[in-house]
Image (cartoon, rainbow, N blue to C red; front, side):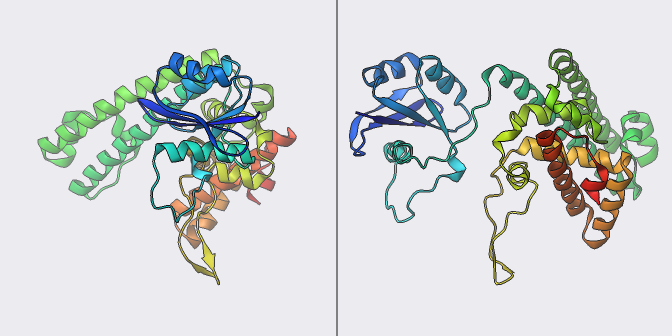
Length: 338
């Protein structure tokens, strides 16, 4: 008899439900997040278990990897694509686990991609680097705003990085403002050191796979960004169309239209935020080093604004890179930016 399991995973415990083909409950229990106990609970049903649906939460690595090593077939549920009947009056973890098992049994479970285990640590290291880069940018923008507020003048980031307490005090005429600015600059310097350290570690141990080498033919995509794209994409063939890839990169609009009017937005968080960041960074560099990208950005900026323009350029780059990876051809600025 075929059995189907659903696991509603939390930070300290999980709810496990096993259903049969008639969707009746065979076994259920709440367990602490101790792998040995979970495997022991599932062991009597090992031969009949068709699959185990695990909720895709922030802490699924240990459970899915362990179950797969134990010989179970795991399915990572894409929680953002799962919808329950809105008329339900009451739900709890037991209902959620049963729902996962039901969807698996019916063959309609929306699944997430289980990224290869051996490559995950490098992907997560690049994610920490991306976090530090964003945090450093936020600090520099804060310093820029503070300086502009007190002087009415704008300043470039490279100039700010060379400031000392004395030079800032001379320009602002206020030692307290200088103290605030230099305190944040020290944080920027620490972040820069750590970013370079992480880059050196990743570049020294991880090499671009052959199918991703052609990403470097795009002006704006350096080694760190190319490695980030490689580690986040995994296998490009899991995206059947360019639109699926662009959507996964969060480079498309999320809105609902009716009769030409906006009636709200869809799930803006659906997709990969790290790919969104990577292609946005690539777009910024492309504006500096690729004339056709600069021309597209300028046209779009005049019609809208710079933020919309850079996101539109990121979308163009994401779509072009999809064809680069799928068809194994060099990046063509003419086709990408028109």
